[in-house]
Length: 539
Image (cartoon, rainbow, N blue to C red; front, side, top):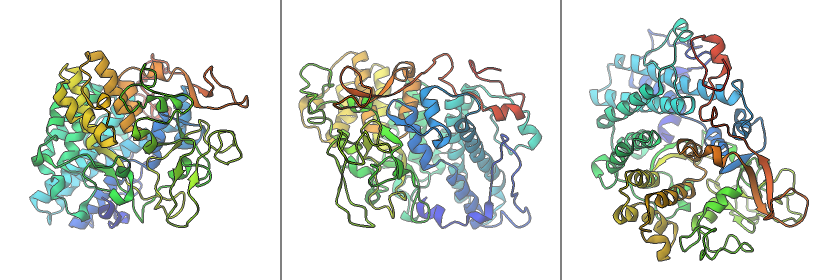
């Protein structure tokens, strides 16, 4: 919705959230003067789209996982505290996520309750608008249920008194509604190939199907997840998608709306984000606060398909970035990596130095990356300044559909050579692998294939806000987050290190008895005594 959102007058519908779950609006619509024209409907629709999420949430969510580390405790409402396990129900991040999602839900409910009053809309337009908003509402409920478990559920516009007394609905019922909605709206949404350029970014049938696959995958509904993926793989009646030829090229302004993108968060000249300055080197940003971990770097296989720990991989600890999965260099900047010039000036390319030297990017410098690594993925050299980027952020892409399909088929014990070739094999060919050891079907047992699929998912989707959900649904967070965050191996004794010379950055704690669900924000429970707390978080 880059053009669609940005050319719409937001002032017509200034919906604002308060602290309560579903409090009355600060700026209620004038019932006599609104809901008359298509422009009115589009203004509210645009407001619903604007509630989908933020760039800050997209990038900082990665630091809630073992892929990334953030050191500033006040960024994104306390992502650092969640990652380290040192938080409680009063943490701002928990309140903000709750408020943001319920603000979106209220906007959607307001739209659905009133849009039929716009008599100038055709039946096709009306159904499409309603389907788009139902998608946004379903997405919001999916995230709420994933983070908090049982949550208040409603499809009408609540009064203040109702919002202060509503109880939590079981997660299974909420997820059931989400899946039903995503199935119900498909027929009323256009396919991507029927979408004019001016409407890029709007919800399509493919987006509804891909999100349905994700919801089912996250819930372990393997057969339903596989079936949803099959609705998109080679089914032009639901949209035409394919892997973009260049992995690095997917995440560039020049290739926005490419063949792989199913749904993305829209930005542009009039809507920018400044988070880029927190994940690039200090010499082109501000201070590095979102940085890759050694655990993620170690996840990338070698060019012959073996892990770096396997015999015969060819991995050389003295030259650790050689002969590795090409996606490593496309995702993470390591020692000696270079960043391209910004469009607004023409400095020399920035070289990242992570071994002790005098560079501001040196791991020993106070504002540089504490792990010695920087994110290259989503770096936008077309930005008008180091902190301003208009690059769209991809929520759903075709590669994820292929990975979901591979995972679901393996859990059904149906990951065959044919499925491998159209999923993992296809992704590795696109990445640039040529060795048969990496491309051919391993013909292994289910457990071994599971490890391969999960490793592939981590490498392909790094820095796309999905790893935290994966480690929680796989129930491995208690293992991968109950450990030290590590960084690059360096010589010298200036920093604490492990036996292999890797920097020890931070100790993390994940308590499986309570951390798999976030606590209900304390402020919400103070205002609504019917909101019971999640286990382990007090009463």
